Image 1 (cartoon, rainbow, N blue to C red):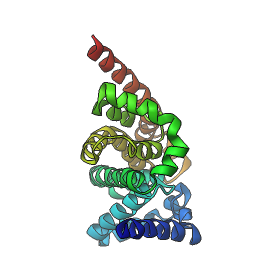
Image 2: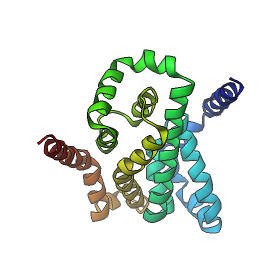
Image 3: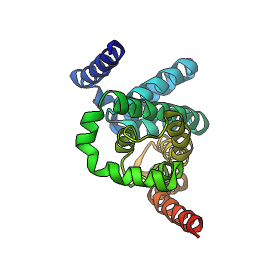
Image 4: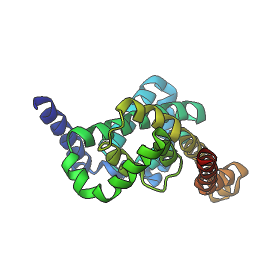
Length: 226
């Protein structure tokens, strides 16, 4: 009981500090774009500290369900580059999602049940019929916001370690698309930069990726049912 209270106090403190000090103003594309040179200079001088700090900020944002994860994903690509960005964000987002699932299961069960109980029956049915593949398909196709997936999955019997590795694999393709988009956006210095091939391809991928994955998942489900 004492551990639960301490964890709850930690979450409340993090959320309170975030909104009291209006920290969400730092998680906007405009701010990140205007501050990119300063971030890049700091990263060049302190690469390990930058990656370490970015990693834990991302974990906290996702784990406590604070706004800004999408912007951070783009920022990771712009600041860290594709390889380091994908590696950092992939693990940070999965750890954060698993923490959110854990908090939902052990601290906020009643609230989540009341708030999203109408979706729980469908999720439980999907897990019963398809197992871990159901979560995998949800991660690939962001039809349901990841925040809701993290919370609702906390009320299912799925083990946290299964939730972790399935989420790690399922979120990786989307992470790669967003980080690549951020990397290309980081190269834009004027309006003319928007029409560069790399930028246009990144935006096209952001738009068609869910459609392609939905089609692939549908074919896999159809094959499994045969």
